[in-house]
Length: 312
Ligand code: NDP
Image (tube, rainbow, N blue to C red):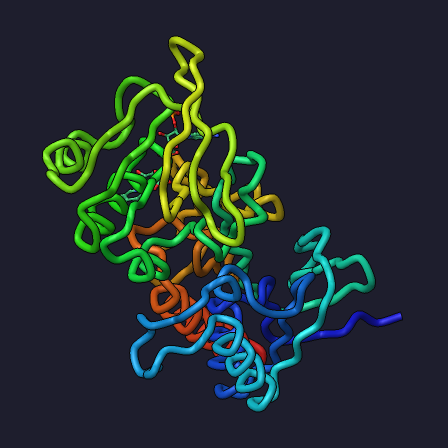
């Protein structure tokens, strides 16, 4: 039995993948998007998306991705709900095996994203969207002038605490160790900021509240004493986990993100990487969309070169 063939297979239906599918379809490539939950990625969690240019007034992440999915389908791309289990290139085509089927393509985009590492403490999942957040740019404005706890001691926690300190003078950075791991300049900005208090050697044991977050149960890592810390919001920045298990053979940076060139190309001709899984300096919806558009354009050029070879 012959496998289904597409010019461009996209793994991941977040904003990078969907943008790539739109650009590919509009360039007359047949495009298939495969995702186990069929649409969304991290964007679905955003309560009010107010920093995507042109979307005004703000809409929910859910409505944004729903419109983007419909737009993608309207251009002729296909989206299926399935899990990719392996990718391979046994001949001149990529072979993508999912739980249900096998597909072939000339080009392939990995847009599987990354997810924020969680604290995994009681109350965390329960209060997501009700005081617990993993995105300061998205949710920070809801905590203007209120008590904000930021968890973590790396670059992200320090950067985001600095941003949150522009919205409130009651920001507390809570870190499990006795010193920050962040780069010196970034850490010093936090330590000097009058709106930020740093609590070292403090481990979050539980997030407590009623309908919204009210406090954190902390344990001092030296004395093991427990204390209750009152707060209105908790921003967790304890590292990201790129979803790169399908492409373990691609070069990565120190944090595990996949390295591409500016055309989103990898070392394998016809294979591209876009969005939050890619090594880069700023992870936002707008930068993920840009990656997706660039990847589709690179796939289009690659396929037109292949076609020129065929017709020579
Ligand atoms: P990092 O992995 O650099 O830091 C994670 C922080 O969270 C560490 O301080 C770590 O503590 C702490 N942590 C990890 N697990 C837990 C846990 N279960 N409970 C409590 N604390 C925990 O991640 P970042 O997200 O900060 O950064 C990711 C990458 O992105 C890095 O390469 C970073 O350099 C880069 N980045 C760069 C920025 C910039 O240059 N402006 C901005 C943001 C990110 P411990 O120190 O004890 O291990």
